Image 1 (cartoon, rainbow, N blue to C red):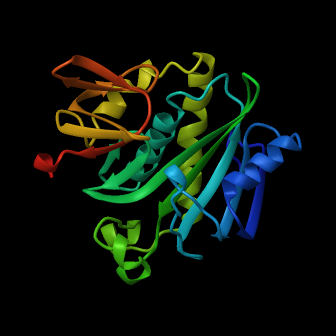
Image 2: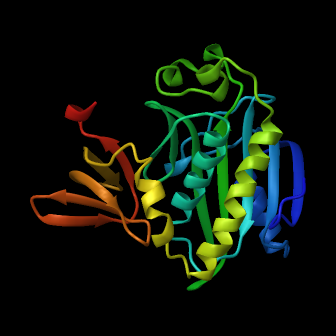
Image 3: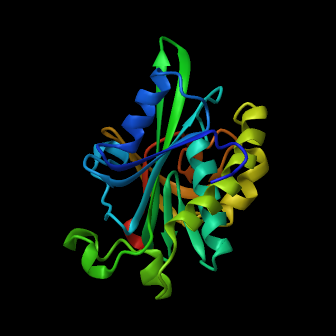
Length: 249
């Protein structure tokens, strides 16, 4: 696979987690632009340590080893690149801050960004991506059947996972290097991101740790923070899990 920015490709039949494997490779000195792909993950995970569901032969799961100056807003840049890749194939994509890719109100993909530090020094960032490509409804466990979808379910067409991956990489690397040159400033892509936001203009609850904040989503900032308007004025939320308030569903 020849894509500018892609330096090395490692393909595994089975791996615990592509993110964990990419972090090991980072410690061994593998370069930025190393791609780890797995047919099956036995310990795949999403945000907050949740298991990441995938089906061998049907799901697309991979991780990229990157070395940016910082990682704020990188999840948004990656999600936006996923949107462009899927839109190129005819899908209408929505993005749920900070890391979910939606078709309609169902989740088709997600992003997991993990940073490795030595003291205060950022050593590397690993971006894990999972996209449901050819899963049928029966492939999903019962808890996910109402909330998840796949490209196949949304289109009644089977898709080549390699082509989906190539499309993502072709969109991602040019904007990644532009973003990196700007020191992680997301400003040039805010408009593109916001017009795909599933939260914009709606009342949202964001949870992180034991804390919650509620407000109307007004947009995102150059550092990737979500802007919420509430009785306190404007609140910037830099990370957390955002869901629509009960009245918006």
